[in-house]
Length: 271
Image 1 (tube, rainbow, N blue to C red):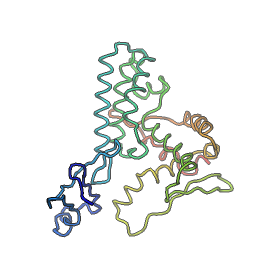
Image 2 (cartoon, rainbow, N blue to C red):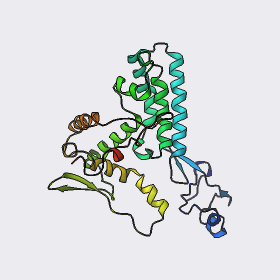
Image 3 (cartoon, rainbow, N blue to C red):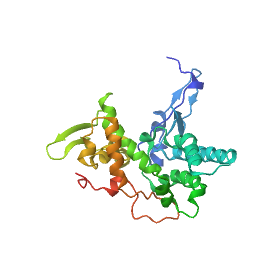
Image 4 (cartoon, rainbow, N blue to C red):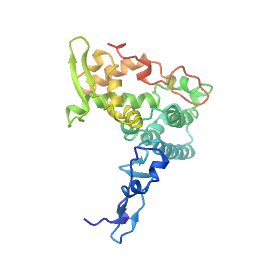
């Protein structure tokens, strides 16, 4: 098969991050692809696929930076076009124009690093500060007053819903499975990582959807985990999350935790 060089991009996931190892001649040759003229197609640092930026280090910091910038631009445009700063108008603009940019396919790239979490929250913090009824309130107070969740909490909520219901209608990922415990009800499982895997691989896997969604799901109370329909799950999960503090990490605010449900709800506490 002949490669069309203008439609072909090379992205190398380099497990060994040491620069000396990358510089070895035989190592570089393993990553090379040639076009029909025999010229090397240079590898890219980042490639966009279905709206998501994938990078050679296997992380999503670059993607988060891009969507944060785009969301700020959209928010600035909306604030410049619409003069009304009332609660109803501003929330409608944010939910329709800005938030979708920050949540597209978030189950895949949802960050665990506090810096990345704060970068995304900064957009919602900036926009809600312009609401007339929220003058004098800090960000955490605005979330409670407006009746909205932090972007971090919304991403984790979606991961729980996705993990519970989507496998019922599609082919379940090979590293996920459910079991019914006689005492604790429905629980999710995932196999342990092979002991010979590099530490960097283990870290990335711990941050992946297939592992984080299991940890989030298993920390929910039994009545949430046992829900069979989407509507029942949303209602039950929503009521449960109302009682969990939502104080996302943002610059200038001191929070005792990273606000993740994995941290706030130790395994076994909600059973």
